[in-house]
Image (cartoon, rainbow, N blue to C red):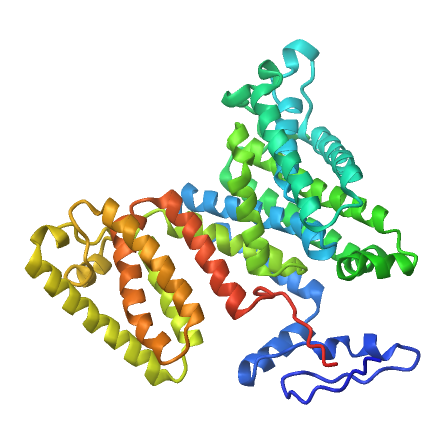
Length: 487
């Protein structure tokens, strides 16, 4: 028999059961871990604030953001961030709450975009006379997405894990192939659909980035509110029961298959609504907009924020999109993010502080020595110089080794860097601390040689690095909760 003992950890709250309430349920909040000191006090006070006041504060802050931005590019970054946040919010239903690995989720996003392009533009006006206002097409697309979610979920409702992932991945790839090759006159084929109407109705229309920002913000807040009500209902509790143990949930009379169908449908509706706004704001849609790389980005946002948390899904989408779209557009901003992530990781993970100071000092000296030796052997080996700009390039000019043609050397260095990172995970101190010095230096050389000059590849690598750091430092994500079970 399993007996649960009270945790002696001072960072874990203890909650006494009330009369008529099961002890395990009453003590669920006592299984949360809190940071020590001031951070823990702030975390406790923030949790006592209540969910609805938090949503109101977040919505108010979001409404102020457009007034602080200075140009359309920044507004576009904000729109992309809200879209990714909404997609992560919808994915959280099936993955975070119901525990279903849905790899075809991006197809629902594409369904909403193509649905709006067909119903609310001139694409079907000539052959079928269909040209609906947005307030009509949006509900139609939402109902259609719910039905599509049911159709996709029906053959996979008895599958779990890898089998479910394979089936849904096939659906996502089939959607891209369908839009590329089937009905090219209607769907546009690889050329997509262009000249899509803006969102309009009731005598008005949205034609500015600021207007779409506010429309998306309202849609995101309304979706979060509706999903919170759903999460705290019997359906939400059933989803979590199915996620933890489908067999036990079925023994407790929960209709497991029906609950899975509902998760797919609700997630599909949220994704499709995001797709309609994407199509209207971008004025065109293409099959490549809904391919696997963007699906990976949605999953990364959910993992970063914390699967199972509404606030975590939204925060993860906002942070990831702003980092990739806002900070990786120029070498200087990309350098700030790259070196900032490395420094922050060292600060969080390395103790005591004197070890951190020693590693940073040793890395600086190591770089100067290596650069001096390589320059003495061959001037061309350091002729490339750092690819960053601004003060970062000035600081690293006589430190990193970048040849005049850095591609080959950079690729070799990248492979060696991966091997060193794996070795760091396997070794113990003091060998690991010593090996960290050349690893940090090689990371700077590879970044300045090849990565900063290839933004598309760098974006993917940076997402992977952020997730690796997050999974090691905080596996539950930024706002996800981890329960402490003592048996």
